[in-house]
Image 1 (cartoon, helix red, strand yellow):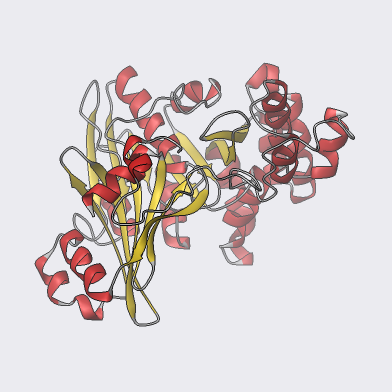
Image 2: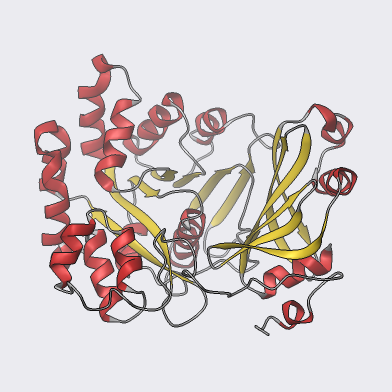
Length: 394
């Protein structure tokens, strides 16, 4: 199995799926492709799960586990975020590949304005997007930038810990939910008594955690967290909506006072090479945007304000970034249009109309390498395909 993991990583896999009764599969540049021809048994998957589970008490109760998160690493191979689950009564494991080295903004091809956003001394920064859109990598790059730039105490609350940060100019305390603290909410409440300058919350899952995060931002800390929302306006609406109607006006006031930025991401398949490129909307909160947050009638003005504030504040809409990627010939028109907030608006803005719409490598769902692409689809006949071990197409 280690050889299969190595093969997946050499192909640039982001996730590895191991399911009882199925072939081992990997998500390579957005596409889920088989790595073996042989199917793995229930006992094989269970044995792997026992190897990944770090605590003896959890291993002893493995048959009762239905969902379990942990991290696992192997020398010379890498680190993984592990989710063990049951489906149809059998075990399945999904591993997310975590690089040893913490990425930089430049390596992730993120807008340079994120450096300035990460340098805020206080307030709330939110990184949003669907699962698998690179939120953890972006937050890790923020922590790394702060670590290289300032003398601060950074407390992270993660489930599980993904990137391992070394203490450089900062002291970094990384706490695993379930191992080092009971929950995000409990860890966040405790963090406020641990002299933090920066608090990273892996995910704001409930009203209590969001409320405590706002309190932390209000009391002079920089709070960085994530939500599974697709753009800035949806993010604001989601946070406000989790509170009772009687509290929502005050939540608007608190958000208007504390929110510094919202970065919303989508990963798109590249046009001329393997891999994916990030497209992101950046809302750098200005005085005018704070007024829009306070007034529900003006929330619809925010997308236009993002486009107008690109040169002055570094804000940008998804469409602006998509047009930039098209000009740089990084993605096809079909991929950009599928990822756009309003595809028809993008069509007008780029003035393509018929051009570029028949490009090769069309990927209508914005996740894969395009219809007809065989990239990463080789199947192992007995063990591993030699081309997988070489990391090349045959």
